[in-house]
Image 1 (cartoon, rainbow, N blue to C red):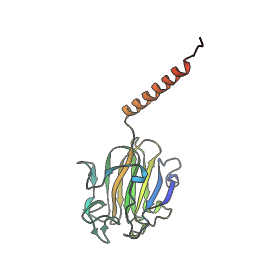
Image 2 (cartoon, rainbow, N blue to C red; image 1 turned 45 degrees about the vertical axis):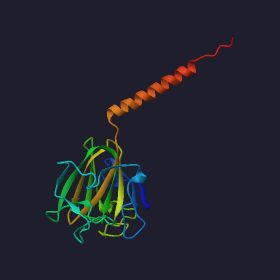
Image 3 (cartoon, one colour; image 1 turned 135 degrees about the vertical axis):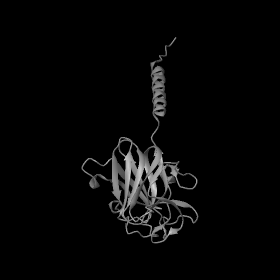
Image 4 (cartoon, helix red, strand yellow; image 1 turned 120 degrees about the horizontal axis):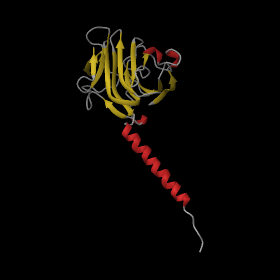
Length: 222
């Protein structure tokens, strides 16, 4: 696998100061046809792969299909390298234009996904816990990603990692004005729960107190 881009700010594709998500990196396999380089190197945890872990009822809404690889070539083919018989998400399905929304089931400071056959007419929307959102089209990724819809090329089938600058990412929207937006294997790093933060801060406080106590001990010679 290799890194195509790193720390790409989306401020240029939104109103000044409006972008609250950055593309922290874009990865692709070095082979052709491409395969998903995976999320392990990002230190993330699997959220959904539509096989071993699928969205709960109601978490995925809109015009979509959980399709079975290899899918329909030229219409909604599986992201390159997807094993036959496994599943992936494709949007839309009922008509050539449509959208869907996926609830991630938590708040994540970063989220990555395998984006198959990237097209200029694919748009992804990242919704954050504070109500803000950032829209990215396939043509906005740049940095070596070729949004021509090629179903096997390693520059058109890539893992894109998004990092939130403010509150975490809670859901993702997918929109396509033609067939189709295909994606798979969502992973991320969860924002710690408030109780977890409190425990961590409490632990740091105790460590600081112990350090101060040690520094306050005086040794008196007899």
